[in-house]
Image 1 (cartoon, rainbow, N blue to C red):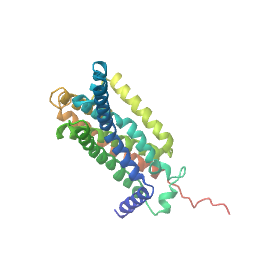
Image 2: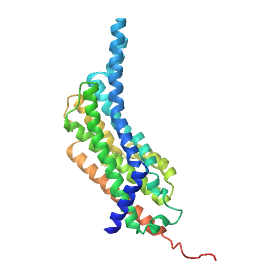
Image 3: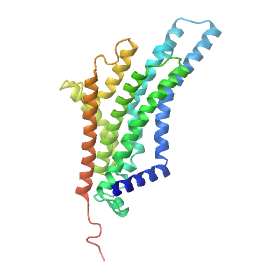
Image 4: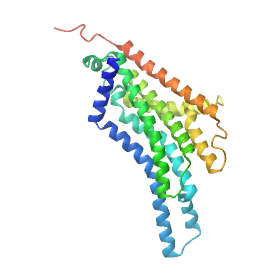
Length: 281
Protein backbone atom coordinates (compact mmCIF):
# COMPACT_ATOMS: atom_id res chain seq x y z
CA UNK A 1 0.00 0.00 0.00
CA UNK A 2 2.85 2.41 0.84
CA UNK A 3 4.36 1.74 -2.59
CA UNK A 4 1.05 2.58 -4.31
CA UNK A 5 0.64 5.80 -2.28
CA UNK A 6 4.22 6.77 -3.14
CA UNK A 7 3.53 6.06 -6.81
CA UNK A 8 0.38 8.18 -6.73
CA UNK A 9 2.32 11.07 -5.17
CA UNK A 10 4.93 10.74 -7.90
CA UNK A 11 2.32 10.84 -10.67
CA UNK A 12 0.41 13.72 -9.10
CA UNK A 13 3.56 15.76 -8.57
CA UNK A 14 4.82 15.23 -12.10
CA UNK A 15 1.39 15.89 -13.65
CA UNK A 16 1.09 19.11 -11.69
CA UNK A 17 4.59 20.33 -12.59
CA UNK A 18 4.24 19.39 -16.25
CA UNK A 19 0.74 20.96 -16.49
CA UNK A 20 -0.57 17.60 -17.69
CA UNK A 21 -3.74 17.93 -15.63
CA UNK A 22 -4.35 21.45 -16.92
CA UNK A 23 -3.94 20.32 -20.52
CA UNK A 24 -6.43 17.46 -20.06
CA UNK A 25 -8.95 19.83 -18.45
CA UNK A 26 -8.58 22.29 -21.35
CA UNK A 27 -9.17 19.50 -23.89
CA UNK A 28 -12.48 18.56 -22.27
CA UNK A 29 -13.46 22.19 -21.71
CA UNK A 30 -12.85 23.04 -25.36
CA UNK A 31 -14.85 20.04 -26.52
CA UNK A 32 -17.76 20.89 -24.21
CA UNK A 33 -18.04 24.51 -25.31
CA UNK A 34 -16.99 24.51 -28.97
CA UNK A 35 -20.05 23.21 -30.81
CA UNK A 36 -22.76 24.84 -28.62
CA UNK A 37 -20.91 28.16 -28.91
CA UNK A 38 -20.55 27.76 -32.68
CA UNK A 39 -24.25 26.92 -33.03
CA UNK A 40 -25.22 29.97 -30.98
CA UNK A 41 -22.95 32.28 -32.98
CA UNK A 42 -24.04 30.93 -36.37
CA UNK A 43 -27.69 31.24 -35.43
CA UNK A 44 -27.26 34.81 -34.17
CA UNK A 45 -25.23 35.90 -37.20
CA UNK A 46 -27.76 34.30 -39.52
CA UNK A 47 -30.65 36.09 -37.84
CA UNK A 48 -28.83 39.41 -38.14
CA UNK A 49 -28.02 38.87 -41.81
CA UNK A 50 -31.56 37.83 -42.67
CA UNK A 51 -32.92 40.83 -40.80
CA UNK A 52 -30.66 43.17 -42.81
CA UNK A 53 -31.20 41.51 -46.18
CA UNK A 54 -34.72 40.26 -45.73
CA UNK A 55 -33.50 36.91 -47.01
CA UNK A 56 -35.13 33.63 -46.09
CA UNK A 57 -35.42 30.35 -47.92
CA UNK A 58 -32.10 28.60 -48.50
CA UNK A 59 -30.20 30.60 -45.87
CA UNK A 60 -32.84 29.93 -43.26
CA UNK A 61 -32.83 26.21 -44.12
CA UNK A 62 -29.03 26.09 -43.88
CA UNK A 63 -29.03 27.78 -40.48
CA UNK A 64 -31.78 25.51 -39.13
CA UNK A 65 -29.14 22.90 -38.23
CA UNK A 66 -27.68 25.34 -35.71
CA UNK A 67 -30.97 26.18 -34.00
CA UNK A 68 -33.15 24.59 -31.36
CA UNK A 69 -33.44 20.82 -31.14
CA UNK A 70 -31.30 20.27 -34.23
CA UNK A 71 -28.47 22.35 -32.85
CA UNK A 72 -28.78 20.52 -29.51
CA UNK A 73 -28.66 17.13 -31.22
CA UNK A 74 -25.64 18.08 -33.31
CA UNK A 75 -23.84 19.43 -30.23
CA UNK A 76 -24.35 16.22 -28.28
CA UNK A 77 -23.42 13.93 -31.20
CA UNK A 78 -20.32 16.07 -31.74
CA UNK A 79 -19.42 15.59 -28.07
CA UNK A 80 -19.63 11.79 -28.39
CA UNK A 81 -17.81 11.76 -31.74
CA UNK A 82 -15.00 13.74 -30.15
CA UNK A 83 -14.11 10.58 -28.20
CA UNK A 84 -11.98 9.54 -31.17
CA UNK A 85 -10.00 12.76 -31.61
CA UNK A 86 -10.09 13.49 -27.88
CA UNK A 87 -8.65 10.05 -27.18
CA UNK A 88 -5.70 10.76 -29.49
CA UNK A 89 -4.99 14.11 -27.81
CA UNK A 90 -5.20 12.55 -24.33
CA UNK A 91 -2.89 9.71 -25.35
CA UNK A 92 -0.31 12.22 -26.55
CA UNK A 93 -0.59 14.12 -23.27
CA UNK A 94 -0.07 10.89 -21.32
CA UNK A 95 2.87 9.67 -23.40
CA UNK A 96 5.38 10.30 -20.60
CA UNK A 97 3.34 8.22 -18.16
CA UNK A 98 2.76 5.47 -20.74
CA UNK A 99 6.32 4.26 -21.20
CA UNK A 100 8.12 7.54 -21.79
CA UNK A 101 9.87 7.27 -18.42
CA UNK A 102 11.41 3.89 -19.13
CA UNK A 103 14.69 2.99 -20.73
CA UNK A 104 14.46 0.15 -23.19
CA UNK A 105 14.35 -3.30 -21.55
CA UNK A 106 14.66 -1.90 -18.03
CA UNK A 107 12.76 -0.06 -15.32
CA UNK A 108 15.51 2.24 -14.15
CA UNK A 109 13.14 5.11 -13.34
CA UNK A 110 10.92 3.25 -10.83
CA UNK A 111 13.94 1.49 -9.33
CA UNK A 112 15.76 4.78 -8.75
CA UNK A 113 12.57 6.22 -7.24
CA UNK A 114 12.40 3.26 -4.88
CA UNK A 115 9.20 1.89 -6.41
CA UNK A 116 8.32 -1.74 -6.98
CA UNK A 117 6.71 -2.69 -10.33
CA UNK A 118 3.30 -2.69 -8.62
CA UNK A 119 3.98 0.71 -7.05
CA UNK A 120 4.95 1.99 -10.48
CA UNK A 121 2.11 0.56 -12.60
CA UNK A 122 -0.98 0.59 -10.38
CA UNK A 123 -0.93 4.35 -9.61
CA UNK A 124 -0.97 5.11 -13.34
CA UNK A 125 -4.10 3.02 -13.87
CA UNK A 126 -5.68 4.22 -10.63
CA UNK A 127 -5.13 7.88 -11.54
CA UNK A 128 -5.42 8.52 -15.27
CA UNK A 129 -8.30 6.33 -16.57
CA UNK A 130 -10.68 7.37 -13.74
CA UNK A 131 -9.62 11.00 -14.24
CA UNK A 132 -10.55 10.76 -17.93
CA UNK A 133 -13.89 9.14 -17.03
CA UNK A 134 -14.77 11.84 -14.47
CA UNK A 135 -13.76 14.65 -16.84
CA UNK A 136 -15.87 13.12 -19.62
CA UNK A 137 -19.00 12.93 -17.44
CA UNK A 138 -18.50 16.49 -16.15
CA UNK A 139 -17.92 17.83 -19.66
CA UNK A 140 -21.14 16.10 -20.82
CA UNK A 141 -23.09 18.14 -18.28
CA UNK A 142 -21.11 21.25 -19.26
CA UNK A 143 -22.03 20.66 -22.91
CA UNK A 144 -25.70 20.39 -21.95
CA UNK A 145 -25.47 23.60 -19.90
CA UNK A 146 -23.72 25.37 -22.80
CA UNK A 147 -26.54 24.26 -25.12
CA UNK A 148 -29.08 25.78 -22.73
CA UNK A 149 -27.06 29.00 -22.62
CA UNK A 150 -26.30 29.42 -26.32
CA UNK A 151 -29.11 27.48 -28.07
CA UNK A 152 -31.82 27.81 -25.38
CA UNK A 153 -32.57 24.07 -25.29
CA UNK A 154 -31.09 21.14 -23.36
CA UNK A 155 -31.51 17.42 -22.69
CA UNK A 156 -32.93 15.87 -19.50
CA UNK A 157 -30.42 14.77 -16.88
CA UNK A 158 -31.10 11.09 -17.66
CA UNK A 159 -29.90 11.47 -21.25
CA UNK A 160 -26.78 13.38 -20.19
CA UNK A 161 -25.89 10.72 -17.61
CA UNK A 162 -26.18 7.94 -20.18
CA UNK A 163 -24.19 9.89 -22.77
CA UNK A 164 -21.48 10.89 -20.30
CA UNK A 165 -21.04 7.45 -18.71
CA UNK A 166 -20.92 5.53 -22.00
CA UNK A 167 -18.50 8.00 -23.61
CA UNK A 168 -16.43 8.15 -20.42
CA UNK A 169 -16.05 4.37 -20.15
CA UNK A 170 -15.11 4.24 -23.84
CA UNK A 171 -12.35 6.83 -23.35
CA UNK A 172 -11.21 5.10 -20.17
CA UNK A 173 -10.74 1.86 -22.12
CA UNK A 174 -8.79 3.73 -24.80
CA UNK A 175 -6.45 5.17 -22.15
CA UNK A 176 -5.94 1.74 -20.52
CA UNK A 177 -5.19 0.12 -23.87
CA UNK A 178 -2.73 2.90 -24.71
CA UNK A 179 -0.96 2.67 -21.37
CA UNK A 180 -0.69 -1.10 -21.68
CA UNK A 181 0.87 -0.85 -25.15
CA UNK A 182 3.07 2.13 -24.29
CA UNK A 183 4.47 0.54 -21.13
CA UNK A 184 4.80 -2.95 -22.62
CA UNK A 185 6.46 -1.87 -25.87
CA UNK A 186 8.22 1.21 -24.42
CA UNK A 187 7.01 3.08 -27.52
CA UNK A 188 4.45 5.66 -26.35
CA UNK A 189 4.55 7.54 -29.66
CA UNK A 190 3.93 4.54 -31.90
CA UNK A 191 1.40 3.16 -29.43
CA UNK A 192 -0.95 6.04 -30.29
CA UNK A 193 -0.99 4.76 -33.87
CA UNK A 194 -1.40 1.17 -32.70
CA UNK A 195 -4.46 2.11 -30.62
CA UNK A 196 -6.08 4.05 -33.48
CA UNK A 197 -5.47 1.18 -35.92
CA UNK A 198 -6.67 -1.42 -33.41
CA UNK A 199 -9.80 0.60 -32.67
CA UNK A 200 -10.63 0.86 -36.38
CA UNK A 201 -9.79 -2.73 -37.28
CA UNK A 202 -11.45 -4.40 -34.29
CA UNK A 203 -14.63 -2.36 -34.60
CA UNK A 204 -14.88 -3.19 -38.32
CA UNK A 205 -14.03 -6.89 -37.89
CA UNK A 206 -16.35 -7.44 -34.94
CA UNK A 207 -19.29 -5.69 -36.60
CA UNK A 208 -18.62 -6.73 -40.19
CA UNK A 209 -17.53 -10.36 -39.88
CA UNK A 210 -18.91 -11.53 -36.55
CA UNK A 211 -22.04 -9.33 -36.61
CA UNK A 212 -21.53 -8.44 -32.94
CA UNK A 213 -23.04 -5.05 -32.20
CA UNK A 214 -23.05 -5.16 -28.42
CA UNK A 215 -21.01 -6.19 -25.37
CA UNK A 216 -17.74 -4.71 -26.68
CA UNK A 217 -15.94 -1.44 -25.80
CA UNK A 218 -16.29 -0.34 -29.41
CA UNK A 219 -20.10 -0.23 -29.11
CA UNK A 220 -20.20 2.24 -26.22
CA UNK A 221 -20.17 5.45 -28.25
CA UNK A 222 -22.67 3.94 -30.70
CA UNK A 223 -25.06 3.30 -27.79
CA UNK A 224 -24.53 6.89 -26.59
CA UNK A 225 -25.54 8.24 -30.03
CA UNK A 226 -28.58 5.92 -30.08
CA UNK A 227 -29.68 7.25 -26.67
CA UNK A 228 -29.39 10.84 -27.93
CA UNK A 229 -31.26 9.99 -31.14
CA UNK A 230 -34.02 8.20 -29.22
CA UNK A 231 -34.74 11.29 -27.15
CA UNK A 232 -34.61 13.57 -30.20
CA UNK A 233 -37.17 11.35 -31.92
CA UNK A 234 -39.32 11.22 -28.76
CA UNK A 235 -38.66 7.56 -28.06
CA UNK A 236 -37.58 5.95 -24.80
CA UNK A 237 -33.91 6.74 -24.19
CA UNK A 238 -33.04 3.05 -23.78
CA UNK A 239 -35.01 1.86 -26.82
CA UNK A 240 -32.83 -0.41 -28.92
CA UNK A 241 -30.03 -0.63 -26.33
CA UNK A 242 -31.63 -1.64 -23.03
CA UNK A 243 -30.46 -1.41 -19.43
CA UNK A 244 -28.95 -4.90 -19.43
CA UNK A 245 -26.99 -4.27 -22.63
CA UNK A 246 -25.48 -1.11 -21.17
CA UNK A 247 -24.67 -2.76 -17.82
CA UNK A 248 -23.05 -5.84 -19.37
CA UNK A 249 -21.05 -3.81 -21.90
CA UNK A 250 -19.75 -1.47 -19.20
CA UNK A 251 -18.81 -4.39 -16.92
CA UNK A 252 -17.00 -6.20 -19.75
CA UNK A 253 -15.11 -3.02 -20.61
CA UNK A 254 -14.08 -2.46 -16.99
CA UNK A 255 -12.94 -6.10 -16.78
CA UNK A 256 -10.81 -5.59 -19.89
CA UNK A 257 -9.32 -2.45 -18.29
CA UNK A 258 -8.27 -4.54 -15.27
CA UNK A 259 -6.72 -7.15 -17.57
CA UNK A 260 -4.78 -4.43 -19.40
CA UNK A 261 -3.47 -3.14 -16.07
CA UNK A 262 -2.35 -6.63 -15.08
CA UNK A 263 -0.79 -7.09 -18.51
CA UNK A 264 1.22 -3.88 -18.09
CA UNK A 265 2.35 -5.02 -14.63
CA UNK A 266 3.42 -8.40 -15.98
CA UNK A 267 5.38 -6.78 -18.81
CA UNK A 268 7.32 -4.63 -16.34
CA UNK A 269 8.11 -7.63 -14.10
CA UNK A 270 9.17 -9.68 -17.12
CA UNK A 271 11.51 -6.95 -18.38
CA UNK A 272 13.00 -6.15 -15.00
CA UNK A 273 16.77 -6.30 -15.13
CA UNK A 274 19.58 -5.92 -12.66
CA UNK A 275 21.16 -2.70 -13.86
CA UNK A 276 24.21 -3.21 -11.63
CA UNK A 277 25.27 -6.43 -13.28
CA UNK A 278 27.98 -6.77 -15.92
CA UNK A 279 29.54 -3.44 -15.10
CA UNK A 280 32.62 -2.55 -17.10
CA UNK A 281 35.63 -1.35 -15.06
